[in-house]
Image (cartoon, rainbow, N blue to C red):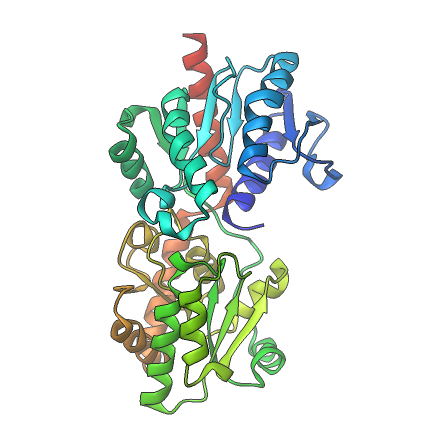
Length: 364
């Protein structure tokens, strides 16, 4: 699971367990397992077809889902991943995490992009309430779609509780496993163009060339929409043998890899939130992130901000954190304070309050 998956899992689990007086129906597009049925007050409902293509999305949300909802007759329909049914007559709460497809349409496949740009504004207008994960995204939804600000609730993400400071002995073994014992920077996320890997790769090359360091760069994530530009930059890297691709890691391994790094490098061009920032704060690892979109809001004063278009700034940030221990420690200390503002408990309570408002709207 990535950001939306964790938001859904962590918030709904807590809501269900905190409110045994309510009945919840979880509607799936494929057979599920007991891991997602959190308590006796959850009834799983499986309807087809498996919605993994825009045409199947349409069939699932506009034909199958309304039929299922008619049988359930819910007070509120909650969609945690930005889809709704325009054919449904029930009160909707939609969670729109970001509108990256409006700003960087070239980063998405044509048909997926067309689906989002056609349906998302209609979903936003139809929904009784909207939840989103940052003030930045709230303002973006208002600006892009002309939505009443009073209809939108900000529900910040939390971060996986597995992310904690790593003991020195464990750090040594993690480095031996992944980088042959060398220090390393880490990136976490889907490997798509808006994550800005092309400039991060160039910056890492520049950093290595200037400072003659043995540091490595560990890239954690799946090559989703791995573009020709990213591939071309990587192939031309002088130090590409110092880039280690791990693919997707299980949460326990991921927390150890992040917690053993020199710093997290998360210089995206666009984020609705950026969960890895808070995970790094929990692991007490310095963060380099971008000075655009939601990232300054989420990171607060606890990260080193860079212009994602500036290879020089990203490279300099790597050098600053790796060479100035006092500065790196000051970021960690600020991160300890900043992380207190984000937890899945706070996420679930904020989402629950948004659900209650949706139901109030329905009753009114």
